[in-house]
Image (cartoon, rainbow, N blue to C red):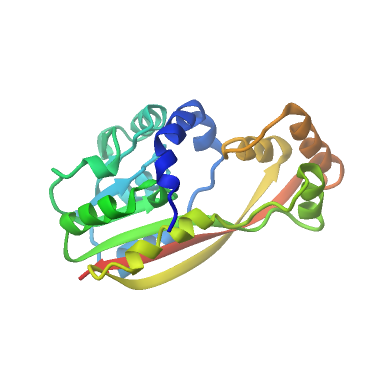
Amino acid sequence: MSDIWKLSARRSKEFDESAVAYDRFRPRYPDAVFDDIMELGGLHSGARAVEVGAGTGIGTEALVERGLEVFAIEPSDGMRELAQEKLGDRASFSGGRFEDFSALSAADAIVAFSAWHWVEPSVGLDLAALLLSAGGVLAVAWTEVVSWGQGDFEDRLAEVTGSPWPKTVEHMRASLVPIRDDGRFEEIAVRTHRFERELDAQTFIGLTRTYPGFHTAKRDARFEQIIDNVFAGSIQRVEDGVLTLFRRT
């Protein structure tokens, strides 16, 4: 079980500082992820969804477009304000952490995009079980890297940083363990949807800076030199949108 949720307050402050870059550079989930949530979750237009850690509204917008009534919770002020600016009154937004919303009304779905690992497991699952009636769905999604780039790009990244770049986020995978161990939830589906993005040097550098870690201008210059001079100005990053769906028993 991951305990990264204990760092959530600090990470929210970091997200405040990178909200615009996060919205610009982080990937958008494939449409099929949202289609799966609707179809496999048995959701229809007008269903009520609570979104945990809505960020800049990347997932929120796709849910609203499918007719869901979304109550989006986001603790980072900078991210939430940007999401509200983008979506206006098409979704309801609130600050704070999901664990603090015990007074919410019932929901047909609880969804989290790259966010459930920030939730304290025991409190979050108790609240999810309270909010969802029998048959309601808990959808947890994130993205995983399949390939950082074509050819020997990954080897060149490792030369710059001193080690291979990770492709999976174990904290996200580990966040599913308490749900799977909880008798109030039944796992009903796991789906992956592959997608690719072509990134120029500045986009790749901007993306890397939205993740925690040690960033320097010297390292960024190396990335730029490799992408521009060795890979003709762009790399093809391949990712999977990973979705796991649970039903409230």
